[in-house]
Length: 87
Image (cartoon, rainbow, N blue to C red; front, side, top):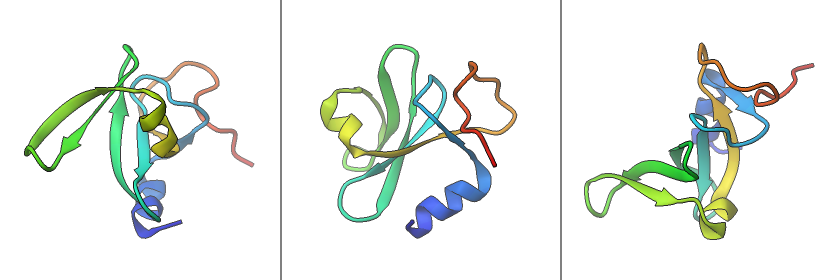
């Protein structure tokens, strides 16, 4: 795991799938370096540096292929099966 992913894992819980409200960790090249929050409508909200604002994208196959891992925010209720089982 890269540094960004290790930092996220100290603060969030691994999710087994991308439920609305979970964070998607994204990779463009080697290490994951970006993230977005999934919505109920099949989109993802994230910061887009080139235009200097947050945007909402449809979560198509191109975006899905960039997802490395889903994470859940602590103290947020999610549907059953979202959080990964811990040993």
